[in-house]
Amino acid sequence: MEKFRINAAMRFFFLIAGAFIWLGIWLTGFEVVHWVLYLPAVFFIFAAVTGICPGMIISRAVFPEKKSAA
Image (tube, rainbow, N blue to C red; front, side):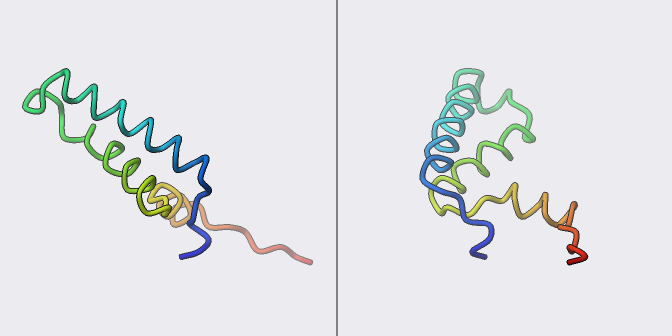
């Protein structure tokens, strides 16, 4: 799980980005916003709080790292 850890600057970025998405959801109205918009908002806040980035886990599962020939 250590390879999915993010540094403090990334955690702060995800916190601010997640807060702005939640602010947008709140200003639009929780009953009006499509449920898909909640996914990045939850992922960003989760990454900021725990330091584990769900986006990195998903992207590495979809695009695995290639083994070097050396």
